[in-house]
Image 1: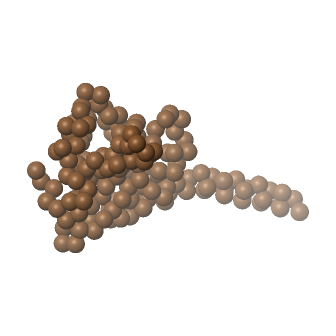
Image 2: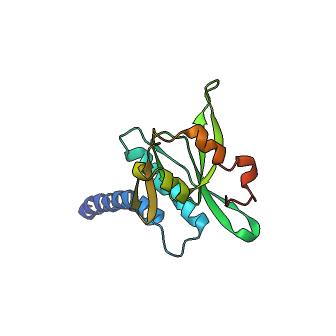
Image 3: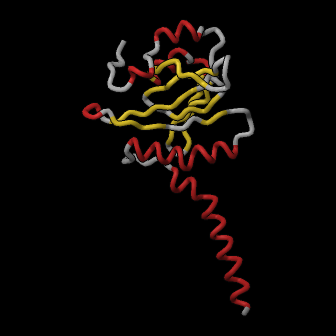
Length: 164
């Protein structure tokens, strides 16, 4: 009977430690991960953990992967221009809230590296479990309407030539 008093708390403690380490064990990015695996790990383990632990008013973007046939796979996230954490992706769809309705309209798509160039002072990068993420603020001096004219429209994005 006394062995049971020792074994039960020990099993409970080991289970609790494993439960706390589970996001790290399964969410960690591995060098051999495909783009789809990376997105799955971000959306399933990293994003929920960040949403649970962040105390500031930051949104955490979801990572999407789409197949372009012979061009391979590409990743994308959507940024609503609110202070957010964005995963490192190939493209970002910029969206803003509509004035007439409580929903968002996607203004267009931009390559992530190009967006980083525009928002250089307002994007702080760091790695978490091998995933690169960016804390992003929209620069007040950058005119969104002017930029929107240069963005690739969402309807033309898939299968379109993204070089401008």
